[in-house]
Amino acid sequence: MKITVITVCYNSEATLGDTIHSVLNQSNKDYEYIIVDGNSNDKTVEIIRSSEKAFSGRMRWISEPDQGIYDAMNKGIRMATGEVIGFLNADDYYQDNHVLRDIAQAFCANPEADAIHGDLDYINKERKVVRSWRGKEYTPGSFQKGWSPAHPTFYCKRQCFEQFGPFVPAIGSAADFELMLRFTERFGIRTRHLQRSMVFMRTGGSSTNGLKAIMRNTKQNRQAFLLNSLPCPLLYPVARLWHKIFSVKNPFNYLSQ
Image 1 (cartoon, rainbow, N blue to C red):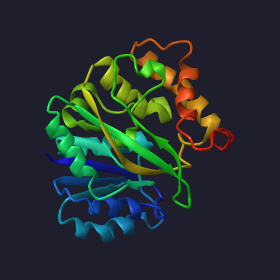
Image 2 (cartoon, helix red, strand yellow):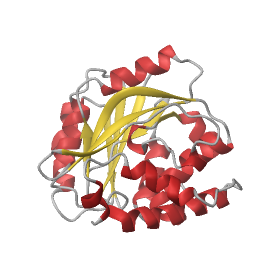
Image 3 (cartoon, helix red, strand yellow):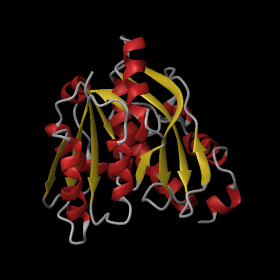
Image 4 (cartoon, rainbow, N blue to C red):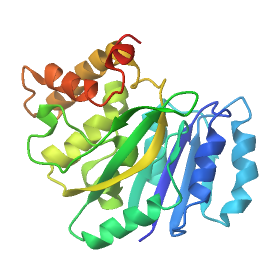
């Protein structure tokens, strides 16, 4: 089973090296690596170009202007040839060398599954874990209760993107939430939770920092429910905040950011 890993980036010279090397070091070599750069003006393209040879033909990349992160992700989807597609952000990296191996094994052990998702840890500038996202198996209505898979751990069969569509960039930073909601809650794809930590995710992105980010993303998540003609409970903001607070080592510091 070939897995397509997609990284989108723009002026990511400070962190992209970690991302690329974590893919290169994977023990499972049945993958393709696609990097979609947004026409960076720092050393990002130099880093990509200097790494290409080490992948022995498994890397493809483009560098051109785009309309934002989800437009770039959609470009990557169109380029993908793997049976399964996943995304590794340019600020993030795999926790060990066997993540892709374990994802492939999970699909083989669960042939009915359309998607596999797992756990991740948020790290600060010192690479210390400050928050952990621990997933669980999906049950109908889970999204309305404040649950969602961790998108950087969400590996989904390419046929789902072909059948149910790509990201909707217009919905903003909740576009990944909307896609998983659409695939899972609306169209009923079958998912399984892989109980292992997959990714280290750096804090500081548009969707990771503090109470303001939670409130903004909650508003956009409501739009995702509306877009898919799915009910969004009145207490959804409370349920989502509850999930967030209890995944943080220091809730006060997190909410005050």
